[in-house]
Length: 234
Length: 234
DNA sequence: ACACACCTGGAGCGTCGTTCCAACCAGGCG
DNA sequence: CGCCTGGTTGGAACGACGCTCCAGGTGTGT
Image 1: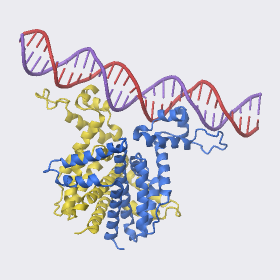
Image 2: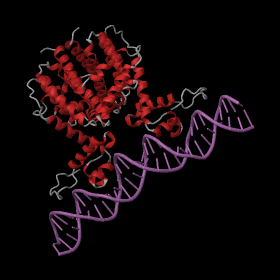
Image 3: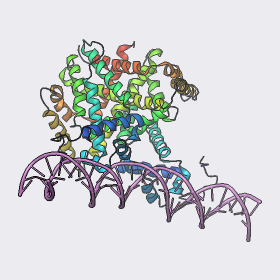
Image 4: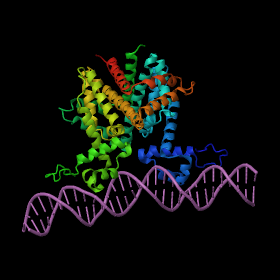
């Protein structure tokens, strides 16, 4: 349904599907996962729920559209630095997704849902394709394309989603001091675990305290890439 | 709050925190993410919400407790086959988590939330520790312990979560025929993508059609493990 | 100027998580 | 023996949610 693309575009600034999605993304970004409410939406758009439901079937479709829009933009953005090798291009794509999910933490669960419930939808192939092409150019033999690409995509979405949830909860702490305090508290809690039961976690508490999320993410990408090129030729 | 461990255990089968969590897991398993309702809970336990709220602070705490219980059981279970090397033990732990998440798909988002919002909670260190110990025994130099373990855990949770969401939606299809039909439909949709825009995805549609989820997951583990041992010594 | 298809927003339904509180019941005290 | 007290229980009710319904507005084609 939803005829859309009104043949005559009546008003200068009317209610449109695009405008609704735009505000939905704003609400999700500013108020988190549960921030997208039809009541908040009607208030921001100065309208009623009926008007919104004319443009959008339900909340699920609105979330899908918001996800699609943000992911498409993230994959279309050109990498800041030049990326000459397939390896660098994979790193660039991964970093683009990482940053998109970091800016819009609600993306993580949404992506997981879309990958499974609608693998034929626009998002899944788009991500798979852009990573897969570079895997192919890496010289991976064809019979391993699917395994290598799946592994990479799973790592990217898993790690980025994890980091996003993390960043979202840290972002609620307003001052820089509060954030440092949070990281410190976690590291300390790990250091104070039972030495008998948690020797390893205690030992890496210091590395957890000092790690940088983005570097850690890229180090993981390198790990998987090393695995891909180690297991098979090239 | 919550005196618990009632001094006299009045009835033979009374309401207890343990009983509530048990039923909560049943509800989540049978009815999916949104199946856990205080109304469904009161009905199954033949009581009112007040009684439940006396044992449990709120829905979030109930979800945490359910997650903790299931994960602890999964990590405690002995691997079916003997696992002599650290590599085999990592594969066994990963497979245990994979199967736990497969059986309880609601675990995936819940784990992601707990890892970020409460990294000091019981679940995060427990998973980190059991993987990390084997990473240490793999001979990885100490300065890379955190990176290697994070990479593994991110892959495991990302891939298992993805698979869980997938399996959950497929499980809604009753007959074996319907499931085969679903897989076939996805593969076909991929094959019919625009050849200009999606050459790679079209090329691997066949591999997607024939892949086995569990094997694919383990292949990804091997990929990361190969990366860990390739990047650094051993 | 009339009609009709498109678009709007307010009222309201059913369900959710959660709170409140009157009643209940077992064990200790008079 | 009865009562009293404090740990438990469950029913009623509240506010917020997603969503539906529908009586109207609004503008364009005729």
